[in-house]
Structure formats: C-alpha cells, structure tokens
Image (cartoon, rainbow, N blue to C red; front, side, top):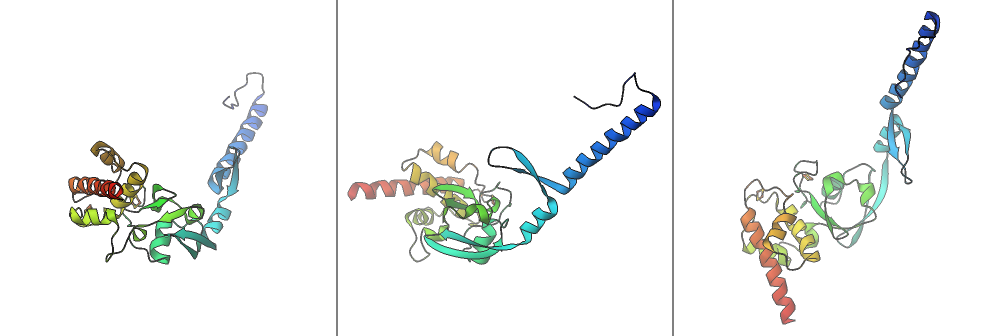
Length: 220
Ligand code: FES
Ligand code: FES
C-alpha cells in the first residue's frame, strides 16, 4: 500500500513529523538503489551488493582455465571480460568477430557444449565449465573442414565478416539435425546478419555440407 502522511486524526506537528519519517525512508531506499546492485541468489531471492564492491570485483584480475578447441588454456583477466575479448586478445583466436557487442549480429558466434552462442555477451567466468569450439577448431586454411569447404565451393563469402558466425551456427545446426530443410537452415541462421546480402549462397553452402556429409556416411 502506498505510504502517505495523510491522516485526519493527526495534529499539524504529528503530520509534519510523519512526513519527515517518510522522506527519510524514501531517501534511504534511493541511496541503496544508487550504491548497490541487486544480485539474484541460487534460491531465487535477491540480495544487495555494494556497487563499489562490484566494481572492485570487475577490476580484479583472476586466473581462468578454459577448454578451447580441445586444449586447456589459462588466462589472467577480470571475471567480467567477455569471452570474445579473451579469445581474440589473449588466445589469438581471431575468427570470432566483434560486430555489435550486444548479441544482435552473430559475428562473434562460437560453440559452447554443442550450442551456438554469442561470445560478446558471455563472460569468461561463465565460460569456464564449457567445451568451447571456435572456427579455428573446424579446420585450417590449408585443410578446411567440410563446412568450411562447402562455403568455399559455393563462394558464400563476400566481405567475409559474418562468415564465422554463419559457419558456427550452421555447424551447431548440422550436428543436431544432419539433414535440415531450407526453411530450417534459414530459421537457424535468422539471427546472423550479413550486410553483403550473401544469404542465398550461404544457405546453398549449408545444404551442400549436409549433402556431402550424407553421401560420405552412405559410402562408409
Ligand atoms: S558481436 Fe556478438 S552478436 Fe554482434
Ligand atoms: S559476407 Fe559480408 S557481411 Fe556477410
């Protein structure tokens, strides 16, 4: 119920006193909002943490062990560092690209435990318990993986900036659904933006990779 100083039975002095108490309570609540962050606990309740403590924690460098492309890599960064920055700046894995930094374009996509995720919005701390695969883990320029080869064969890249995200998203799709229909391919790639308009060739490349894989499986 909304707290109010209105009460007909009170004298002017009592009403004035009551207004001061309400004002103090509101100021105290406002102060907490300005100086604290709300943190969700495991059991679903919230508790407050001082912002200065949160900021301090963000600045402190810590050691994290990541499993990337089948290898264990150790980095020394603050816990809130986006995985994308760690991959590019600390591990020199430059396939994931910075596009928007807001999980909107898909250029930074990597695979974490079989799921395509936007590495710009995953912190390094959160990524520690996952198997991470980047485009580098699918093949090299001298020995491209089947999906990479399909993109080359279909000449699916124009500027190439979106292609990391397209291939990694397609890889997660084909691993879970080896023979997707065109609408399924389009739906999976829906959140990956290509400013060059290479979409038709990209869809053809994913279809080609699926067909090549099916043929290989039949002949083996
Ligand atoms: S940079 Fe991550 S989605 Fe755009
Ligand atoms: S090929 Fe240029 S953004 Fe997609």
